[in-house]
Image (tube, rainbow, N blue to C red; front, side):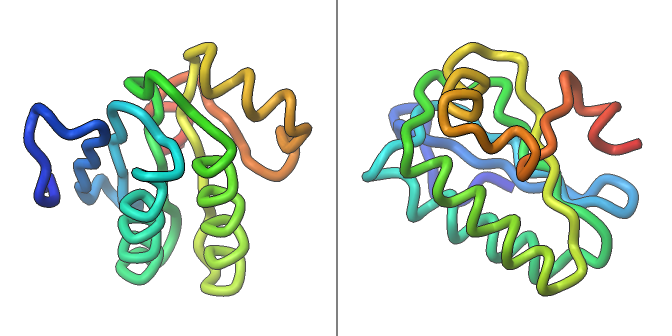
Length: 118
């Protein structure tokens, strides 16, 4: 499900249920203006999952500190709800931001969707 987005939107989030997980496929730019949309999608995914939420950031072209803050907050909310938050990323913008912030241990990153779902 794509929530109110068009091909011109700077951020697109598609949500689907895959086994015990809710998968959010995120594409585009995550910055101060688009982070609230990602936060809302993460909140809804956490509320509707009983096991884990996988945030697939493979198609993210820009990942600012606002995006990192959203994912750290989602991790905390997920912990409180008993839901794991896992990231899929192999792209430099996302990996570099996580590395610079030093939060690799807090946000588990998997190289592919299959690994995050396992």
